[in-house]
Length: 381
Image 1 (cartoon, helix red, strand yellow):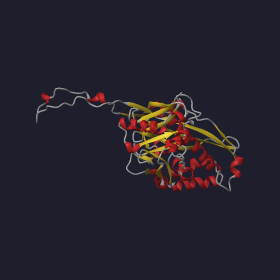
Image 2: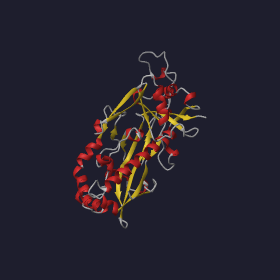
Image 3: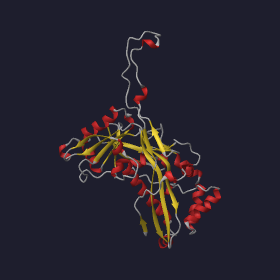
Image 4: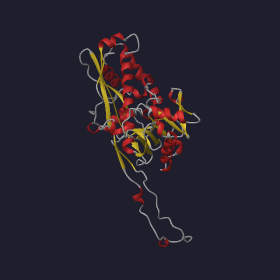
């Protein structure tokens, strides 16, 4: 394929754009704070997939897009035609809801695919995690006693913190030659192949950014590694460490810090995952049901009631550097991807014998626990 891919760039700054326009073009009249994707039901009682409903509502629009692509119209022209028909100057191609390019590969990018996603119409997002409890509770109160009978008091505002999470724009652009477009006209469209390729690239980026934050991209949003706490390390190689005990203690720390046990998930590199599976006396399968998403489901390792996901976002234990993270335990109820705009295609002006297309998203990872519900292990000496 004659695709020229540029590295992910940060030229998309939502502060210089109309955030209301960005939000409306992405989510229409959906209220801010709506959870639209939650396969694990970590924030909802049942798995949520509003993207399927949104696609069905706009099916005719996508059909028109595809028909015009097959007839060879320029992508920018198609976008403008659809805007005219809709009577809107804001419309963009939201491929994150299109089943043909809807990428869910949780055995490779589980953090990006399974984390809850919710809408936001704000660039700056604030949460107030509770950081302490009161030690002013006392006995010896008389029934119906007055305020003067209390011997101690507490300043409740000191028990909460305030964290700010700013939306970050991320994306890249790609070029498809006319030769590729013409050569694929009788098969699946070249544009469809490119959209699928670009969507996968975005998912891989999100996976690494969610897990590693600044260690992946200093211009991106903070990840688990930035927000969480280092609980300990795995020393030497697997011959010298009991991986079962280490992972159990890691998850128990999240539980101790107030994480909801049934919502704790573990993300590990492939070698640590495999070692845990081999040491696990009873290999129990944790089934992730994705029928609601039209994708069936998959099985992964269950450990002490927690799903364990292997991820391509972490280097294999053997090749990881000293102090690199190798496993995270996360209360999934405390984290989410908060999106001003999910993955969207933006056709650019045609340049010579090629189509130029950008793909972009605006979002950030939010942690409502002040980091206590994200614990991780690193590779020791």
